[in-house]
Length: 297
Image (cartoon, rainbow, N blue to C red):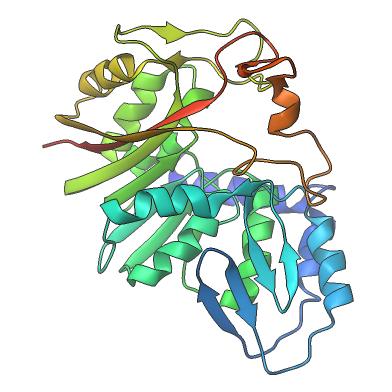
């Protein structure tokens, strides 16, 4: 199946019974002249009147909201993740002006809206979630950007019509049972001279080892490997990267990830051992993220 056929097939996901009401609600959004400010909180304002009560009803249909925050005409969507903290950590290391940029696992597009600050040539998001695509469309209805959102995954990068100068892949690698294969797919999506910004769970240690959770890690069932930085470096070398630069490591805290009334589910505080926050409820080391920059040449 080629990309055209995959796109056509995945467009049908928008008619699923749990997604169709969201798509219908998007058609009821007001058409107003807006101004978008892409600071820590992606903020939308207008001189025209907007019914905030109706707007909130539509936004809450699309819960849970994971990445953000957003402010729409005074309606604050207080997302589970303070994504501005991760963005601001990475911000000193990149310049996207005039570049083709991809965000793999883009969720609702928070980072892509932030990328617009640099006036890139093009921004493309890859995420196979119909819910997150609907959240993106909700926000973009008011931002009115030309961001392209593809219901595709990292495995489609090698066959995509374009190559990218900069690829962001934040919080995806540990969800893959074949991390080296995924890194190879990322490498194939790069234009010559391009770079990748990657973050993933890591564990401490100088040896090239990886934790392999038996059933779940921090109550996340689809976490397969949590490597040391040395193991991550070896994976990247095997995938064909020549440059592996560690930008830093960050312990996940409740300042960054926490329960809000925009998710109605558990969050970090429920994933850690209540008697010892240095461990997950399973007894593994608590979440720490490693941030790296990769280049092929």
